[in-house]
Amino acid sequence: MADPKELPEGTDTVISGAAVKNENEEALIVREPTTRDRMLEKVRDGRGKLAGQAADKTRGLVGQGLERSSEALANVSKLVGDTAAGLDERLGEEYGDYARKAATAIDDVANSLASKNPDELIEDTRNFVRKSPGIALAGAAIVGFALARLVKSGLDDARGRNRDGED
Image (cartoon, rainbow, N blue to C red; front, side):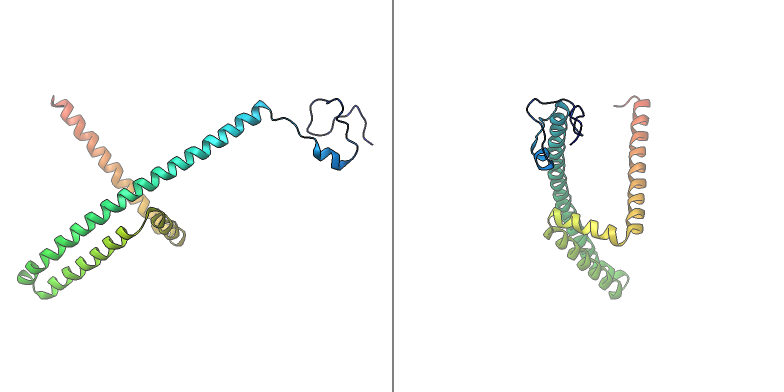
Protein backbone atom coordinates (compact mmCIF):
# COMPACT_ATOMS: atom_id res chain seq x y z
CA MET A 1 0.00 0.00 0.00
CA ALA A 2 1.18 3.55 -0.76
CA ASP A 3 2.40 5.95 1.90
CA PRO A 4 -0.74 7.64 3.40
CA LYS A 5 1.00 11.03 3.43
CA GLU A 6 1.55 10.83 -0.34
CA LEU A 7 -1.34 12.12 -2.44
CA PRO A 8 -2.52 10.14 -5.46
CA GLU A 9 -1.45 11.60 -8.79
CA GLY A 10 -3.72 14.41 -9.98
CA THR A 11 -4.96 15.50 -6.54
CA ASP A 12 -3.97 18.63 -4.63
CA THR A 13 -5.69 18.11 -1.31
CA VAL A 14 -6.73 15.30 0.95
CA ILE A 15 -10.47 14.78 1.21
CA SER A 16 -11.45 13.36 4.53
CA GLY A 17 -13.11 9.97 4.25
CA ALA A 18 -11.90 9.47 0.70
CA ALA A 19 -9.29 6.84 1.35
CA VAL A 20 -8.59 4.65 -1.66
CA LYS A 21 -8.48 0.97 -0.86
CA ASN A 22 -7.96 -0.39 -4.39
CA GLU A 23 -7.50 0.78 -8.00
CA ASN A 24 -11.20 0.36 -8.89
CA GLU A 25 -12.23 2.61 -6.04
CA GLU A 26 -9.72 5.25 -7.17
CA ALA A 27 -11.56 5.58 -10.49
CA LEU A 28 -14.80 6.33 -8.64
CA ILE A 29 -13.46 9.48 -6.98
CA VAL A 30 -14.76 12.45 -9.01
CA ARG A 31 -13.10 15.80 -8.66
CA GLU A 32 -15.12 19.00 -8.91
CA PRO A 33 -14.49 21.11 -12.03
CA THR A 34 -12.22 24.06 -11.37
CA THR A 35 -12.81 27.62 -12.55
CA ARG A 36 -10.30 26.94 -15.32
CA ASP A 37 -12.27 23.86 -16.45
CA ARG A 38 -15.51 25.85 -16.52
CA MET A 39 -13.84 28.66 -18.50
CA LEU A 40 -12.41 26.18 -21.00
CA GLU A 41 -15.84 24.62 -21.43
CA LYS A 42 -17.38 28.05 -22.08
CA VAL A 43 -14.67 28.81 -24.65
CA ARG A 44 -15.28 25.47 -26.38
CA ASP A 45 -19.03 26.09 -26.45
CA GLY A 46 -18.53 29.61 -27.81
CA ARG A 47 -16.09 28.37 -30.43
CA GLY A 48 -18.59 25.74 -31.54
CA LYS A 49 -21.39 28.31 -31.80
CA LEU A 50 -19.18 30.73 -33.75
CA ALA A 51 -18.05 27.98 -36.10
CA GLY A 52 -21.68 27.04 -36.73
CA GLN A 53 -22.66 30.65 -37.38
CA ALA A 54 -19.69 31.13 -39.71
CA ALA A 55 -20.59 27.97 -41.62
CA ASP A 56 -24.22 29.10 -41.98
CA LYS A 57 -23.13 32.56 -43.15
CA THR A 58 -20.70 31.02 -45.64
CA ARG A 59 -23.39 28.72 -47.02
CA GLY A 60 -25.67 31.74 -47.45
CA LEU A 61 -22.99 33.72 -49.27
CA VAL A 62 -22.09 30.76 -51.47
CA GLY A 63 -25.79 30.31 -52.27
CA GLN A 64 -26.08 33.96 -53.28
CA GLY A 65 -22.90 33.66 -55.33
CA LEU A 66 -24.25 30.58 -57.09
CA GLU A 67 -27.47 32.36 -57.93
CA ARG A 68 -25.73 35.47 -59.24
CA SER A 69 -23.12 33.48 -61.14
CA SER A 70 -25.68 31.31 -62.85
CA GLU A 71 -27.69 34.41 -63.83
CA ALA A 72 -24.58 36.13 -65.17
CA LEU A 73 -23.56 33.04 -67.14
CA ALA A 74 -27.06 32.72 -68.56
CA ASN A 75 -26.85 36.37 -69.71
CA VAL A 76 -23.44 35.76 -71.28
CA SER A 77 -24.81 32.66 -73.00
CA LYS A 78 -27.71 34.66 -74.42
CA LEU A 79 -25.34 37.41 -75.57
CA VAL A 80 -23.01 34.93 -77.29
CA GLY A 81 -25.98 33.15 -78.87
CA ASP A 82 -27.39 36.44 -80.13
CA THR A 83 -24.08 37.33 -81.82
CA ALA A 84 -23.98 34.00 -83.68
CA ALA A 85 -26.24 35.27 -86.49
CA GLY A 86 -24.01 38.32 -86.98
CA LEU A 87 -20.95 36.08 -87.10
CA ASP A 88 -22.65 33.93 -89.73
CA GLU A 89 -23.06 37.01 -91.95
CA ARG A 90 -19.67 38.63 -91.32
CA LEU A 91 -17.26 35.72 -90.90
CA GLY A 92 -19.12 32.65 -92.10
CA GLU A 93 -21.32 29.92 -90.68
CA GLU A 94 -18.35 28.10 -89.14
CA TYR A 95 -17.76 30.94 -86.69
CA GLY A 96 -21.46 31.29 -85.97
CA ASP A 97 -21.53 27.57 -85.10
CA TYR A 98 -18.61 28.09 -82.71
CA ALA A 99 -20.55 30.87 -81.02
CA ARG A 100 -23.69 28.71 -80.75
CA LYS A 101 -21.66 25.82 -79.27
CA ALA A 102 -20.02 28.21 -76.81
CA ALA A 103 -23.43 29.62 -75.87
CA THR A 104 -24.77 26.10 -75.28
CA ALA A 105 -21.74 25.17 -73.16
CA ILE A 106 -22.04 28.36 -71.08
CA ASP A 107 -25.77 27.76 -70.63
CA ASP A 108 -25.06 24.18 -69.47
CA VAL A 109 -22.60 25.49 -66.88
CA ALA A 110 -25.14 28.08 -65.73
CA ASN A 111 -27.82 25.40 -65.33
CA SER A 112 -25.37 23.14 -63.50
CA LEU A 113 -24.50 25.93 -61.07
CA ALA A 114 -28.15 26.82 -60.54
CA SER A 115 -28.99 23.21 -59.67
CA LYS A 116 -26.26 22.87 -57.01
CA ASN A 117 -26.67 23.72 -53.39
CA PRO A 118 -23.81 25.40 -51.50
CA ASP A 119 -22.72 22.20 -49.75
CA GLU A 120 -22.34 20.39 -53.08
CA LEU A 121 -20.28 23.23 -54.50
CA ILE A 122 -18.05 23.35 -51.43
CA GLU A 123 -17.53 19.57 -51.63
CA ASP A 124 -16.79 19.79 -55.38
CA THR A 125 -14.24 22.51 -54.65
CA ARG A 126 -12.59 20.41 -51.93
CA ASN A 127 -12.37 17.43 -54.28
CA PHE A 128 -10.88 19.61 -57.03
CA VAL A 129 -8.25 21.01 -54.66
CA ARG A 130 -7.37 17.48 -53.48
CA LYS A 131 -7.02 16.21 -57.05
CA SER A 132 -5.25 19.28 -58.49
CA PRO A 133 -3.58 21.29 -55.73
CA GLY A 134 -1.18 23.00 -58.16
CA ILE A 135 -3.97 24.31 -60.37
CA ALA A 136 -5.97 25.40 -57.31
CA LEU A 137 -2.94 27.24 -55.90
CA ALA A 138 -2.26 28.93 -59.24
CA GLY A 139 -5.92 29.95 -59.49
CA ALA A 140 -5.86 31.35 -55.97
CA ALA A 141 -2.72 33.33 -56.80
CA ILE A 142 -4.32 34.76 -59.95
CA VAL A 143 -7.49 35.71 -58.09
CA GLY A 144 -5.43 37.27 -55.30
CA PHE A 145 -3.38 39.25 -57.80
CA ALA A 146 -6.52 40.47 -59.59
CA LEU A 147 -8.15 41.49 -56.30
CA ALA A 148 -5.01 43.31 -55.20
CA ARG A 149 -4.94 45.21 -58.50
CA LEU A 150 -8.62 46.13 -58.16
CA VAL A 151 -8.16 47.37 -54.61
CA LYS A 152 -5.03 49.31 -55.57
CA SER A 153 -6.73 50.96 -58.54
CA GLY A 154 -9.72 51.83 -56.34
CA LEU A 155 -7.42 53.41 -53.77
CA ASP A 156 -5.54 55.30 -56.48
CA ASP A 157 -8.84 56.61 -57.89
CA ALA A 158 -9.95 57.71 -54.43
CA ARG A 159 -6.66 59.54 -53.86
CA GLY A 160 -6.95 61.26 -57.24
CA ARG A 161 -10.48 62.44 -56.46
CA ASN A 162 -9.43 63.75 -53.05
CA ARG A 163 -6.52 65.68 -54.59
CA ASP A 164 -8.84 67.26 -57.16
CA GLY A 165 -11.17 68.38 -54.39
CA GLU A 166 -13.93 65.97 -55.33
CA ASP A 167 -15.61 63.66 -52.83
